[in-house]
Structure formats: structure tokens, C-alpha cells
Image (cartoon, rainbow, N blue to C red; front, side, top):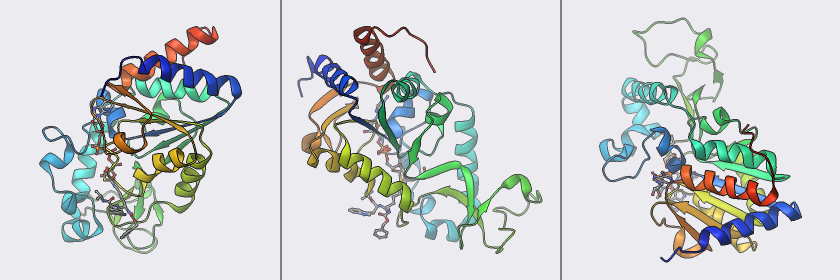
Length: 264
Ligand code: BJW
């Protein structure tokens, strides 16, 4: 795909929405956290699913088969995420939120890095690795309030005694209702959608850009590689890492609107 000139066109599209106070929606995936050192899922060499089987680790059945292993795998990932920092892509998006009057950030990521970068409103489609709930009744659980007994992992829910699990969405599970409908509503009203760092293969999230496109939005994708979405819904493809491209877009936008640099 020839992407020469796409940066300028993307900038013009952002400026147009900025001046008209139109709806800007951003949809992110694991690739936006890659430059923070968090592996994506489907990279053939370094992706999480290159070394682990999603059926064993990211399903209810896998958890019931080997609860301790799944618990420890999420503990391991949580500790890794804890040691990372937001990258310039996360920071740029937090700044877009303050610049654009009508802005929605939808993420499939569970790593909390958008919030750490300063994003105030984040629609988390697949949950958050720093929250816990119980397996049977979805009771929210705070680990600080449980009696620490390292021998017994996973811990049990203080209300119903079922296992405690990370509050993330596994395969075969429904996405949180209200968040999902807010995401599709925002997509249906979007005039411009930025899609960054997702392979676009996991449903129903992957249908969000198509919803925006069908409603007439311009869809700009930022990714080092083409995704499943590129041929079908993408109007402008910006090839490269989102940390660099999003911060370049922010800087260029600030120059054009003559806004001094002061990051959130
Ligand atoms: C960079 C970069 C850089 C690299 N800068 N970019 C309809 C059709 C077909 C299947 C289904 C369907 N409906 C439901 C399904 C089944 C399933 C599904 O979609 N399966 C497909 C894989 C085929 N969906 C579900 O089960 C969902 N539930 C559901 O639909 O419920 C209703 C229902 C129930 C029962 C029966 C039927 C319907 C739930 C999906 C939950 C997904 N959960 C996970 C794990 C979360 C917890 C955890 O982290 O452990 O969410 S899976 C994983 O994939 C994670 C991600 O959020 C998600 C998306 O991945 P993402 O973000 O796109 O990452 P990658 O790795 O795929 O891509 C990274 C991209 O970054 C690449 O493009 C790189 O090039 C790029 N990149 N460096 C920018 N520097």
C-alpha cells in the first residue's frame, strides 16, 4: 500500500474535525502498548499466543481446568505491566482528549496505560487486569481485603466462595453491556475514527470500525502492518509504530492550531 501523503491527509482530517467540534473516536489494541514493552497477542515470534494456548489461559474452561496456573499467568503479566510506563502514543491520545470537544477512547487493552498517561474517559471493552471479580457471580473483589494465604491460589470470594479471577473478558464471554453499547453508539456518531495497534480479528470489538465506516466516518489506521480491517474499512493507512505516529500527529496539529506544548 502506498502511504505517501497519508500523514498530511490524516492531519487535514483531524484539523477539520477539530475546527468543527466534530466527533473523534479512537479505537486501540495491544499494538499501542508494544512500545511500552508489553507483548501483543498474535505476533508470530513475540506475541503472547506464540508461547501459550489461548484456550488454556483465556477461557473459563481453561481456568476451571487449571485455576492456579491461570491465576499465576495473570499475576506474572500484571507484574510485568506494573513495571511499564505509558509511551508517547498513550500520551498523545490523552492530549487529544483535552484538545477535541467530542472525543471517545475505546480500548481492547486491559493494561491501564491509557489511564496512566492521563486519559480520563476510557471505554475498556475487555476489562482491566488490575481489577478482580468472582467466577460465579461477578462480585467485585479487592485482594487487599482478603486474608492472604499464598497456599490457596486462586483466593475465594468472601461473598459466595467461588474462585476469584481477573476482571478481564475471556473468549466465549460477553463484553460488558453498557461499555459495549457506548462504544458502538460512539462509533455510529463518529466523523473520524483512528484505529491503532489492533489486528482487528476479535469480535465483537473488531466490528466497531466497520460501524463507524458504515455511518460515514473517515477511518485512519495506524499500524506497522496491515490488519484484517485495512482492506475493508480503512480510508487512510499510516504505516509505522503508533507511539511515533500519534505523537507526530499531535505535534503537527499543535503547530497548525498554534497551541503551545503542555502535555497532560
Ligand atoms: C502495532 C505495533 C506498534 C504491533 N504500534 N501497532 C464472530 C465471528 C467470529 C468469532 C466470534 C464472533 N463472535 C464471537 C466470536 C468468538 C471470539 C472471537 O472473536 N474469536 C476470534 C479470535 C475468531 N470472541 C469472543 O469470544 C468474545 N465474546 C463474545 O463474542 O461473546 C458473545 C458470544 C459468546 C459465546 C459464543 C458466541 C458469542 C470475547 C473476546 C474476548 C477477547 N479477550 C482477549 C483476552 C483478554 C484478557 C487477556 O489479556 O488475557 O482480548 S483475546 C486478545 O485479543 C485480547 C485483545 O484485547 C484482543 C484483540 O487483540 P489485539 O489488541 O488486536 O492484539 P493483536 O496481537 O491481535 O494485534 C496487535 C496489532 O498491533 C497487530 O496488528 C500489530 O501489527 C500491531 N502492532 N506493534 C502500533 N508499535
